Image (cartoon, rainbow, N blue to C red):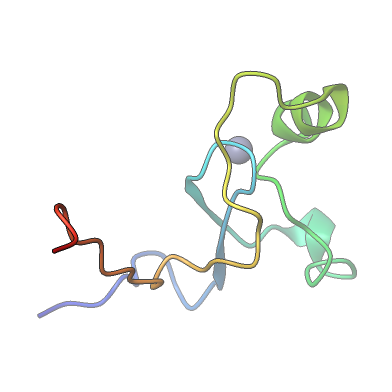
Length: 73
Ligand SMILES: [Zn+2]
């Protein structure tokens, strides 16, 4: 099973706005730990306010598994 490594060893993150993975960029080398969005566009949209985007609180990672049981009893 190949891992999610395609181009070199660049680290990846998940955009907090659009939810897509994006790779490290040169311009982020100093602020990579603070980068949350894949692009200026996503960052701008996130600032503008999320009105129609159901977004997890950010604390939930992509590996968060919740067990939801339909029909409690
Ligand atoms: Zn994005």
